[in-house]
Length: 270
Length: 286
Image (tube, rainbow over all chains, first blue to last red; front, side):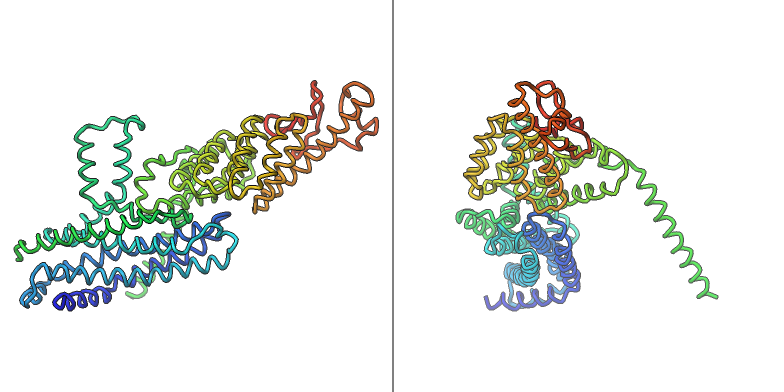
């Protein structure tokens, strides 16, 4: 742990100094201001729309953070050869990867925390202006949705570390992470479509069914973490759903980071 | 000299920018719009492509149709909205409610415009039934379905079924709904039932223009009720149907024959029902 701590801290500092963070925060702030304008146009369920926009703002900016700040943190060390400085110290390569990842987790948690404060503030202000249009509303579910967003970002970031451990350029990592994100959010719909294909009157080839079943277990199922709709309508979740989602997120992230550490240990650095 | 050239080039570019933008805006206006072709991306595709922003896309589609309907109020031509455009509104709201079936506003908008303006009653009911399946805490959507069956489709059996369904919801005025449902079987009470329905609809809406619509409908129905009562009195007094409504005025049973909301006169059909010559298919309670 004592060897991980400095790497984690340096990664966090490096990330927080990145100018891209200001741009990302600006996007989120603009969406939260737009929240006020859009909610004025809604006739009935103002609360639902306010929660939708606030949560989506946090989600989008978190995604930008993982894709454009997170991936560069790792790539920069390799590109600028600063990694030799680190590895020449008594730090193993797996320790380096895990330390970096914890730094990134700290960065994600800190940023989403600040964004969440603004999101909650915007919902709160809209709730003050239109109290009669917040009939079905639950703060605990909104906070749970925000924590699930954070967890899914951590998972995506772990996956980007896995890709970065074997690709030669940060651009390829970026593309792979984006593909994983898109598959991760659509895989469960495609999977259920394949399962119920006879009802939808389509007959997919056998190898496509196998491919999708493999993809379902290989790629992270990010749609489990998306409970924005439940939060917006205050539809309660079962404790077992919450527990298994948390466990799934932690297990998948750990697997991805373990894989990244193993691959990175065998990698030949230029 | 160089500064002058820079200013000159910038001025020309700025002018060209304004001209091209204006020309492009005009040209874009002439392009066929989605509203005319009624095409919306199929909801199943939207579900997959909207990733984790499904309910945000649902909000967006709802706002798009809301803004479109709002923009038609500036039009002067008649009918204000073409049939293809109503079809587009329906498709958009269908997509919006497929993405987020719990969202109340698209159902509300559909019920406000697809019925009174577009006469797409069956389509509106399809949306409302989807909503009442998901929003199992809410009595308003099954109530709307019941109203549509009763008022527009004149199907009392289904109207009763949906009204009873609405009465089971936690927020429903249970006794009022079940009483109204039991009254529906009495055809003679139709005008009275319609007034009861519309008064409840008025209570459930916050939209001022919709409230006005209901209010004018209620006052019209009240005058129909008045004429209907006069017809009954006439039958009791003279033992036969009046030949037309003017007879009622002549015998002093009513002061005047009221006009319907479209400015058309009421008349008496061969079965002795009070009817209006405008929009007879949907709006007249016989």
